Length: 436
Image (cartoon, rainbow, N blue to C red; front, side, top):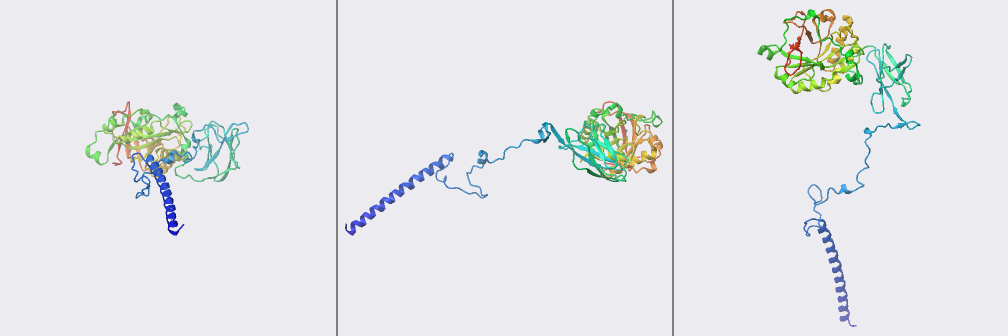
């Protein structure tokens, strides 16, 4: 074969190779275009194979919910432990075991012990016992999960919770420092000591006298909201009521329309017999209803405290119940009698005055205004007014003009008042505090 024939042969081979390569490229291109066309509903085949990157970095047309179809993307669901009815530990018989913790604190020459389970709940219905080193063993006789140890010398003590079947008690003792002087500060865990009325005998516990001493009232008292001059209303004098569960359901919008400026609401009381701290069942309903209607609010607590420590407890309960809710009027300690059989009815004036001062100081240290409520006779005979550290005095005296000669900032002028929106009698008051 001559050189010319060789050249022709090489050229034919090259042409054949080029043809094969062109066929392969054409076949792959059709397959790629067909795949992109089928995955884009209504999309153009001109741009289907070209990823467009947007300004935020996302790929145009990307399926951003594709991860939902990936069974391995999410962690396995964890059961909700809070809804379980069983505890983590079991004994050798397979029965549930509750791990216990004891909390200990002191207000003044006392030890307060709370028995808590592994969910943080107070354990009730069990007669636990706690041993206080070098002092003795103390029982939770009323089975409320709280043990109070009184008359303890100041110092450091170790507490041990004794074993009880079905419970795992702490292995190590708990330390507590007993204070020598009462601190007028809110007790952080006071809510553990607060009870509801469903837990008590109301006839024995809520026994506050509904009236005042006969010499502090006469037939000249007003029984309606006073007709105060407009300029007095605008400057200082305000008309108000005080209410508790005994007033039942209240239509606060109607009460506001009647001309009531403020309401002093009972938040709770100490049981006359047991000494328990008890919340008024209408407290929150009255508090929220009055504030919603635009009525300014203050609070009162009916005391049966027999010493300063119990007064601090009562003030702490008020602060705890109020929480972050703002009020405009003071928090008063109602220091009247409880029918003659109350645990604090026979206190001497010095002790009763100390109780009032401890309550007011604790309330003030919590950032609230404070005051004392009582009748003329009680201010004269059952309190030492000159020694009272109360910024506000609320007087109860039911006549046209009070005979009380001391200073007072509010005057409850009747317990037989009538206001639309409240069924039955209601206490009526005048405030000279100048609260706008």
